[in-house]
Image (cartoon, rainbow, N blue to C red; front, side, top):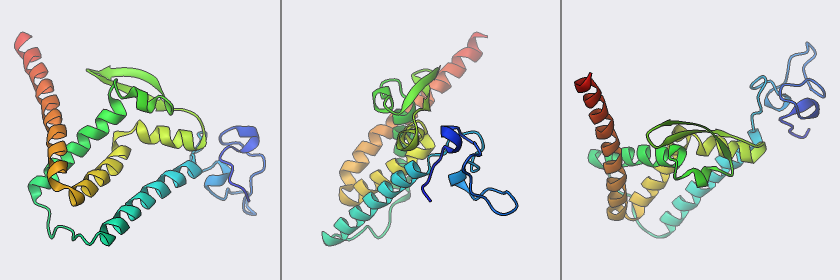
Length: 189
């Protein structure tokens, strides 16, 4: 049976052509019941998850073949640095006005929400919709960015620390900007 995330002439949640059990219940995500009334791009998710997994596996294989050894431990400071950098990079890609050009093929602007951040919503169908959901979600991007930074840390720890330091400094600056704004509002009234 072919996967069709939009049963009944392309309408989400439709009933035509549904295969169900004898009691009329639905069989699962392929029949539109996974998220009633909205398209869930399972194939697109599968492609993205497969890409993430394949890229990570290829990195691990290449790293192993290079004869390098992984660090025996990662200092807590580096974990915090990589975490702050992951946070900032994922917000920059998912929410920054300037990085809209990266998201534009997969999303549309919903609204400007604060300072330099915007809210984009995914658009399209299938893989395009799945990619839109990924690039518009800082939480979703964090796994990809965090993995990339950890891979970079394994190969070039000094360079990765430097990049992470820069991103972390911007994240700290953001928090200080907001703290200043709150302090200024309270002082003025």
